Length: 298
Image (cartoon, rainbow, N blue to C red; front, side, top):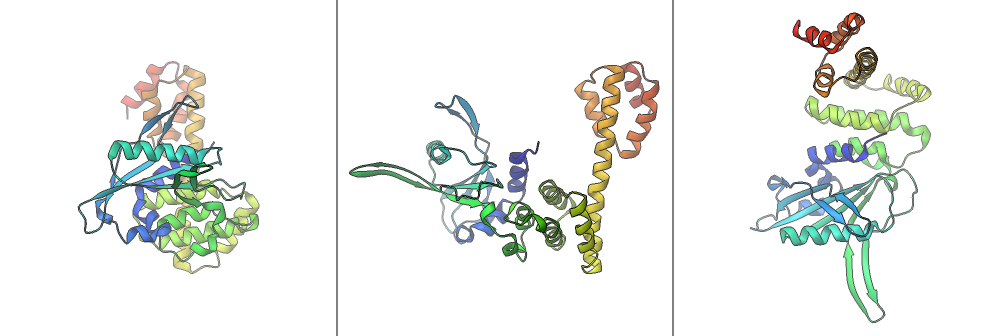
C-alpha cells in the first residue's frame, strides 16, 4: 500500500514555498517568503464520526511589509469523501480559534478517479438568509494536464506531474519528462532523491512501459540522459538492497524467531555488501546472541 499522506507531507514540508508559487502566485504577492514557520500538527476530535483527525500541513507566515501574520492550512486527500467540505470548515474554525489569525485553506486531491470536480465551499442557508459561505482553494490533480507543467522551473511541478491527467500510453513519457525537469533544477542529492522517489512511486512502469521509457531516454541530449540514468540506477540499487533486506529479515525471523526492533534497525542500516555478508553468516546462527556477536565483530 502506498502511504499517500506521508509522500505528500514530505513534498510539502520540503518545498512549501515552491508549492504556493506554482499554484497560488497571487499569495506570493503579499506574503514574506522567508517568514514561513511550520506549526505542529493538530489532532482534532471529530465528534460526529468518533475519530481523531490529524490536520496535515499548517504554516504561519507574515504579510509583506506588515507586522501581521496569517495561517496557510493545506490538506491532502487521496480519495473523495462525503461531507469533506464540512470537515474543512471545522478545521478552519478550530485553527482560527486557536491562533486568532486569518486562515488560508487549501485542499490537494490526488485521486485518479472519479474525474468529477470536487467541492470548494461549505454553505449554510435558510430560506431567508445565508448564514455561512466558507470557500477554500482546491488543487485537483486529475483535472490538470501534465503538459501544462513541463516548462515550469519548479520541483513541485516535477513531482506532481506524475499524478496529473494523462492517457495510459503517456506514462513512460510523463516519467521521462518529469525526470528531465528534475535534473535541470539544480537541487541537492537529498532533494533529488525525495522527488525522484515520488515520481517512481506513482509512475511505477510495467515491463512494456519500461521498454518505451528506455527507448525515449536514448533520444534525449547525452548529458541529460546521463543525469537521468544516474537517478534510474539509484532506483535499481535501492530496489536490490530492499529485496536483499526483506529476504534476510525473513530468514532471520525463521531461524531465530522475531528479531527485536533494535536489531532490526541495525540491519536496516547495513549496506548491500554488508547485507550479503550477513546473508552468508546467518546460516550458522542458532540464537540472537550469534547475530549480536556478528555485529560486535565488525
